[in-house]
View 1 (cartoon, rainbow over the protein chains, first blue to last red):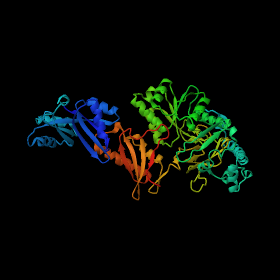
View 2: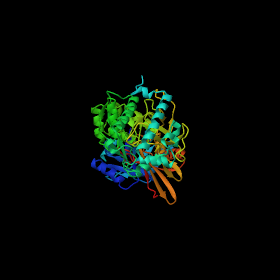
View 3: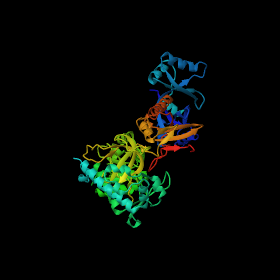
View 4: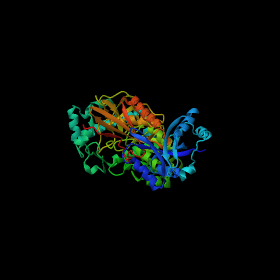
Length: 144
Length: 434
């Protein structure tokens, strides 16, 4: 299974809350690979992919945050026009729904990555694989 | 086999009990009239003399008294014996006004202790039990009251008082506490801290009963406590004017037995002062029948409840009051509608996705009152989907609206951000300038 774990954190929309999250991870020496914030008025959900998910999850939980883990795919996007299209078209053709996605560029700026949450992770991984799309494994995310 | 502390009294036939109440009522009325200028003046104002009081139903001829009288006669103007009879004072904190002072003769303390001995026995406690008293000691009646009652039945008392939560849990384990007495909100906090320490109250302690009171709480909270910790949660009732914590439910958990040989209770319409029918909600009014330094005549407690005169299946014939629904002075009026924090609590505690703590905030925006209910999102139900959280918030709002008939804004907050209390929880913050 190529799915990787994403950490989600429930957060009130108030000054300093994000800083608490960042400090907790920084103190534990956990590195954030990609991050997005979805907000809904008074509250929001921070979603992130980190280098050491177990540790990140543990320190946040011990720090009193409401945390959950979710399976997502880390999909490589070709840095050419149509790179994104190829991916979403494959999913659409196979009737797989995307809940949300966020992108990041790797440290060496060689590859763009799309973090993808879909309704059927296993089948999405399979069809993307068949279409020749590369997905990063947990180990790769750790070592980027 | 049910256990009784004083079976002759607790199971006394109702007619005998009424006869006893009548005798005692006549004595106490004569006593206060003879000993207190406050009561003499009050009786004169309504044109009643002790000789007018013969039957129980004559009680309605007597004037009401209330906390206002207690404040106006501060510190001891309503006492009926000179101070050298008094062996102890307790003083209320005065969160809603000036502090109030209550006093006891040795006999009054014994009456209080006996009342609790009956109550604690009725929930199955006795010799061999270790009762952890987590109510505050000192001027507050909770700690010392429970302490004496627990010693009386031969149980072992752990007089730890309120606070110092990790120590509470350590000693609970080390000394094998089988019961704890504290506020229900504090017990929920103890459970929260225990979980953080990796200790399960259900599996890692001997706790089997909780005696919870000093703040209104709902049946839904009872269910939550019982399901989360595996203990039986019992409601305890009593106010400092009546002595302190005095009476509990029996093991059947179906209303609080108020000892009729010690207290004559009425439930009245808060507006008209007329007695309501059994089963109707009203304000509790208490006349003490065996309390002498500071007796009460038709004292309006301010707690709202329902009277049940049916004998209980446990064999006790004394009347029961149903769970306290709130206090007349706890009630908040939002957009002209009466709201009791306990109503909000019973709605919230039915919803598993919200945590054990909540807070009600009332603001005035322009001409309109706005009520916001803050609830904590629990870890076990948090999904990463925004839509789930929106649904939760909407659902809580809808349930509140169904029960309260007003729209409340629901704010989802992070766990641990609503202040925890060691004693009475402050559930309402009213920011309106009156």
